[in-house]
Image (cartoon, rainbow, N blue to C red):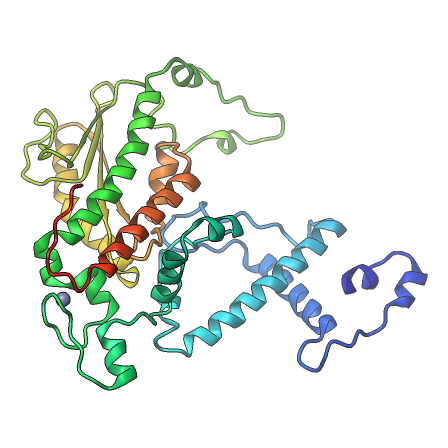
Length: 370
Ligand SMILES: [Zn+2]
């Protein structure tokens, strides 16, 4: 509103603009000017990358210099929202426990729409919110709130925190609780890849590759060139093995190894093999998990390359509380899979399983059918 009045071309309207009274804390004029100077500053800095998505994958930003009047208004509104969000984060940083989520690097933001909030059962929504802010009644919090000694009911670790219950308890690990959750999520990922694999050989996909990248007048040839990984699955005849139900054996014709990644996808025609490894770590450890898995399969990838196969490694992480790591973006883009839907599915599956693990935290018996 203030913007409409301030920037009006009509002098009469402009004159009607008067400083609005919005209390002492918040002055629209000041905030708008601040937003504009930030936008101008961003023009100088240019696009900035977040996480490990790689150069050129970041969000495309509209430049202030080139924006029209209407676009500028939109930019200012967005910038003000961003400033408010930053203020919230700054506040969260100062809170050691409730604000731990600010340290989640390499996580995709999770969007809960009103529709989701309606659909999701109350108990799960409550779990999700309390898990993020670490205010669930885990042994450590109970000890802190009521100053009495509480321990993990499964392994007896005193003052065990939520991280322990959801990702570090040795008894849970031995009983196969974490494996159960991992396999549940893997099933979702494998299903999406299987759909993609089947589509790969279809006629519409093979026709797509006959597309010739014409260069428009005045455009340089490099602008039309895609990344070499993109459209990997255009050419058909892909095979897939998943480490579920039965033990995965890495295809012998590619390489002899005892390693068992979660998913192997290969095409003998293209002599290309994709190694996919899924991990469900604690959100703060997503980056570490990525590095660890990358290192673990480094040698396998090299061996494949020595045998004349082009090999690509994709470590994928989904945090225990349903926050998907940015590494999934790369997989989705390279295989042309709809990212939004897969991220949502994976996030919900992991979060649902974690909720179940939380509910069963005091129950020593563990038996589930997959
Ligand atoms: Zn335990």
